[in-house]
Length: 352
Image: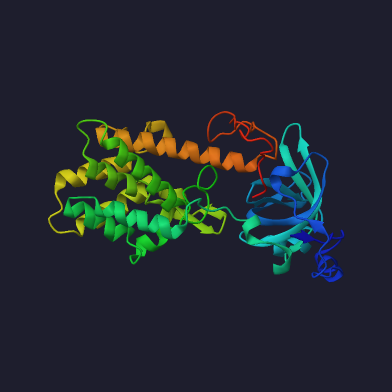
């Protein structure tokens, strides 16, 4: 996939001067950008904010990205002309200069920008997604729910996660996070399923763990994210609800309301599942109203943390240029990640 160079100028002159059927410049991935490079490529708008400089003039701060990563981008000139195309969720063609600032890090100063034509990009170059087909994950979820023996717990899972339910429809397509792991469509399904599968496997290795409670809590631990986030492909934002209440509080409310709608739900099972929801972040300073106090809650928290960390490794690996083996410092893992080179001769990381 390739694009023709965008001339500098106003939004109208940029749009009018291009023949969108002539394609001459290859798509440049975020992970391959180098300091001082002139860029003219297609990106996905993940975030947009209009800011005021000290001089009183306005500028736009964007978060542009593709399947390999994202970077901050700034529009200092022609703000009014380019702002209408800078809509989160939109695919844009941007031209400018990429640099790595000694204090502020990587950034793209945009000189021209407009909405991209469909012929100018391949969606596979722009949007991240699960490594496992969604249909397979849905089948695996159904099979796992069927292994829960207690009828009230199984009914709870079906009412909240069933694809034909209001919450379940959103849970199947929601992202798991805004930045650090599975921050893409169907990411919440991928994350919660992998955590529950890990919990199920580990529950058989340690005595005293109630598997049904642990698996139910693992599948539901992040259910509050269906209301805490709003997403258009990879453009993910916290909702007002999410900012004001937090995903743990929202999840507790959703699960408790569903429990109260099921006749005869055992109080001890309700308490055990709700404790997992409230404590899955672990330490109080990490946002949990209570710390894990049961085997099941401790297991879910541990596997959830592991799943999120390994998800960050997946994200970081995609961001590395061919031949690189170390990432930069990343808050998702509180350090840098190392990826061993392929064992086979001639191996290398291919473009996503």
